[in-house]
Amino acid sequence: MAYENLDTELVNELLGDGRESLRNLSDELDVSVTTVSNHLADLEEAGAIEGYTPIVDYSKLGYDVTAILQLKVDGPGLPDITDALRDEPQMMSVYETTGDYDIIAIGKFADSDDMNNQIKRLLGDADVQESNTSVVLNTVSEYTQFSVGDD
Image (tube, rainbow, N blue to C red; front, side, top):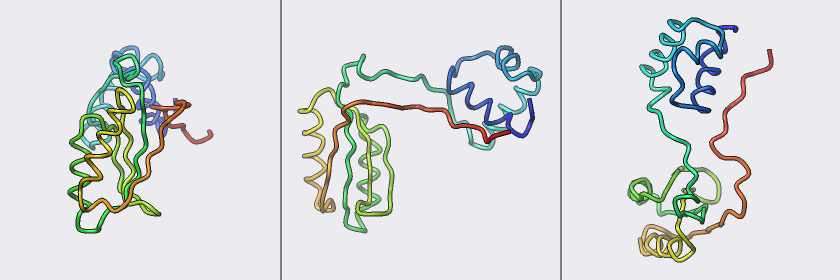
């Protein structure tokens, strides 16, 4: 394995199985256990790897609705709204964006009533000027590994 892609390959392996042993990773990547351990430590120290989390099928936990919320927010209220969204346990991702909307958030909800309640709470904030919500019909790709450039 070329070392210039080792970190990317290591991250991709861990995305596939975050509990993979160093020995299995070294076998898969065709490098020594020490090399894997050193690169993993460097990635953790640099903050590129912040932790190890399971890949969860939220529908099996009762969260059958995925929604994408787009919000226009009054400028000074942006930090408060993003903080509030980040602290909501059902929000999986929160992004400050350019374009027509200031915030895009992705949430998982038990049902449409659960989603509507969350949206109504958000719209009750005076800093939220406008919202647009899209319900995901089918998840085509989620938690995808990134690809290494062509060799």
